[in-house]
Length: 297
Image (cartoon, rainbow, N blue to C red):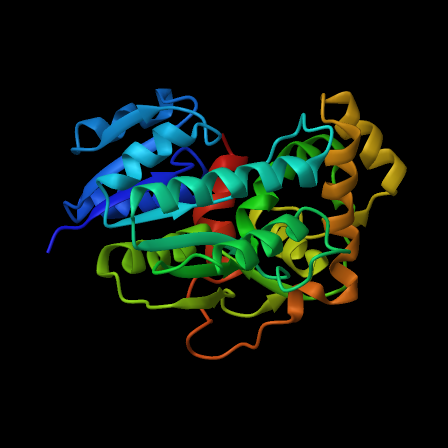
């Protein structure tokens, strides 16, 4: 059976991979993104591509009406003066579109730590979105609580090259689940295509095991030929000024930093690891297959 599926955030790290998987299986896929240039490669594979904003309730309603399932998420808005208000606005629009359209299956991109509604920065919004989506009647909602993306280490390649060390605001010695987004996409795509979930449920996706930032950095160092590569936890104020200098709003910056500094409280370690939550791609494989080629470009 070929399923009709809408993917929001199709230019994102997970959404793009979901799109590729579903199109390779010849499902009927509609991709929605604000900027569609990166999606043109999917058109030849049969995708319907719609340029639009996630805050356009009529556009979402029209797309959802034609679909069996949809992948939804809570996008970042680095310019938001009130991050939580923006997140609540987006969640409200998603709910309105779902209710008006009559769509019956929703896969919601959430995160580990979304069981908490404060003290976890950006994740407080994903936690609230879970709760609000769970109030929908006659709609099955599966929340994908993903671990920390291994791809986040790609963002600090410039730091490694320029400074000779890896660095973020997070504690370097607290181990957390980390996952490759390819594994997250495989799981989400399967649920979107198979419609194999009912009611309201959570699926944690936790990678092969827990890693510390320092341990992961050591693997990077070995791969790039700098075995002495170290991890440095940066001061909050230094990181804040860097984000503000890049045009991020102060409120979004504060939420982003809180998410990083709160890792040591254990909020990312709440979900239990078992066979259903463990995924195959190791840090070593990710560093060799994904990080190293990009580093060498």
